[in-house]
Figure 1: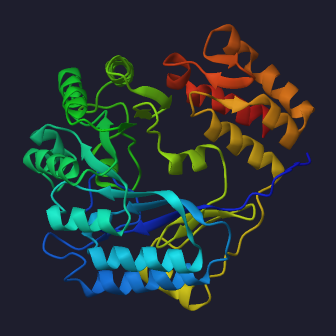
Figure 2: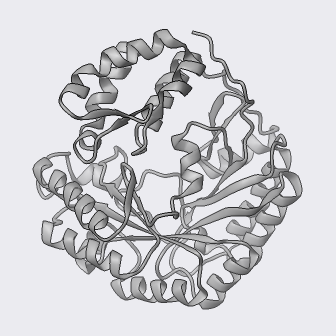
Length: 392
């Protein structure tokens, strides 16, 4: 299979990982470093040391186009001081450039920032925040190991509106232990009432090595049944679309004109920089994940920060393009698939998808292959497993 790229893929997006958290949530398997309830950027030498390491890594990166999107994820980036955030952004601007009007996103947790912090983040360039609410019920927050309270949520929402951050996303988790449909509906309604421009809904995944992985087995009580989690997904789709949100990706809803531009880079399988402990990057056809532990990350940096991996084979790029692109409601362009991977591959894709076209899980509209909403999205794993089996 020969790929045919008429336009070179040059990265214009960067993910920056800030691993520090007050505590590790019971469902979390991200690379994080726990600092407790008292320390934050202004008072932690550990965080200061990490910011300097981050800036060193950024300075070593190959240059591309000025960045159109930057995403600070974690961890809890809102534990950074304004000066630390500004230091990272200035380093990105100096070495890579930041395009005018770039989307600069930052994950923030309730209870980890006040008005001066949020105003400072906005002043140095943040124009999109993603608030990690997860649920509006005190008992569910406690079950999930979250460090914030329901009061913290409402305070944070008020601050975001007070500072007038242009783009405000809110995260929820469905399928939590002991979570009922009534609680889920309440969370959805409270999320809408918070007036965000974007809402992300994530179905709980029990990951090995997490606290939940030790406590629970998928499908067992007190986790909701598969039938209940399907009802939660369908309820989320109906409640949010009825409220005027576009269901533009399997887990994401946005007011018209407010989609997350950075995450679209992932779903469209475009290249991006990754900086920081555990961060993944996709540059020059190579997918690379940095060490997930602080000391190992520092050692990797000290040894030159070499991205030592092979170029992703075309067959894998095709599967990644389908796996990621079919998450989008608009789907994947047939013409793009034919241009990059050849007509023969497109014929194989159609042959594989025919049963799902017949039963309405997959559709072809406007020259794009897409999953139907909600049924196709609900059974996306089945469709993708078949594609991987037949094309892999």
